Amino acid sequence: MEKKEIMMSVKMEDASSLFSNNIPLWSVFDLCQETEEKGSLGFMDLLGVHQDYYNGGGGGGAPLLADNNSPSQVTVKECPSNSETTQQQPPTTPKSSTTTSASPLSSSVSTTTTVDQAAPSSQHADKVLKAKKTNGKKREREARYAFMTKSEVDHLEDGYRWRKYGQKAVKNSPFPRSYYRCTSGSCNVKKRVERSFTDPTIVVTTYEGQHTHPSPLLMPRSSSSSSSMPQTYFSHQHYLHPHHQQLLFNTFPSLDFPPPPPPSSSQDTTNNNALFPLSDHGLLQDVLPSHMFKQE
DNA sequence: CGCGTTTGACCGGCGC
DNA sequence: GCGCCGGTCAAACGCG
Image (cartoon, rainbow, N blue to C red; front, side):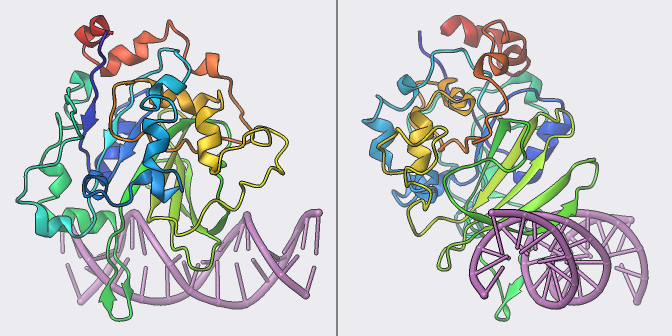
C-alpha cells in the first residue's frame, strides 16, 4: 500500500509545457528541492509553515488529508541561480523518494530528478527568470514553487497579503499572468498566478522567495474557514482544513518532501469531491503508470 | 486617505 | 541588430 512519490524535475518552462501537454492533474512544483535539502527554508518556511508541522502534525502531512484519491502530484523543481554552481552534484532527489516517471509525461517531464534541476543550460534557466538587474547586478534567483490548483478564482488565498504589481498576457495562452508581491515591507516574496490554458479551472501559482514573516492573515478574523483553526499559520490551517487543495498532498502520503502549503482558495470555488472524484483515476492514469495504482 | 488594482510603458535577455 | 517575450515599474484609478 505504498505510494510512490513522483518527483519530476522540470524546469519552470517545462512546467508550462506540462499544461500544454494537457496534463490534467494537480501538480506541485517544488522548484527548489535543494533549499530544503540543505535544511534551510523550504516552501513551508516560504509560507510560514514549519517542517514539524508536516511530520508531526499529521504523520507526514498526508494522513492529515482527506483520503480521497487525488490526482497525481507532480513535483517540479527548479533551482535558483546557485544551481549553476552545483549542477555537477547529482540531483538531490527527494528524501527517500522513489521517483517514478509518469509515462505520459515523460516527454516533458524527466524521470526522477534530472539534470533539469541543475539546469545545465544556464541560458535556459536565465530565460525563465529574466533576472532583472538590480543595483547593477543580476538578481539572484529565488527558489520557486509552483502549484496547480483547481479553482475558479485566480488569486488563491494562502494566508499572506499580496499586492498585484503587474499583469501580462502569456504567450500561447489566452489567460493573462498576474504578478503579485508580498505586501510586507521586508518580505520579498513574489508569486505569479496564471491559468492553465488547457484546463482553465486550474490555477498555476508560482511562489518565488521566502517569507520573512508569519502570515498576517492568521488572525481569526476570517469567519470562513480559518477562524476556528488555532494553528499558527494560515497555511497550516488550510492544510488541515478539508479544502480541495489539501487533496493535492494526499496523492502521495508517503512523501517525505514537505507538502507545500496549499494556497487554498478562500472563495473555495470548487468542492473537493468534484475535484477528486475517486473515479477520477483517469486523470491519474494519464500521469501515473498503471502499476502505481496497484501499489496503493 | 490608505491600500490595492489596472494598465501601458519600459527594461533586459534571448533567439534569429 | 532587431524583434519577441517575460518581468517590472509607476501613474492613474477604484474602493472602503
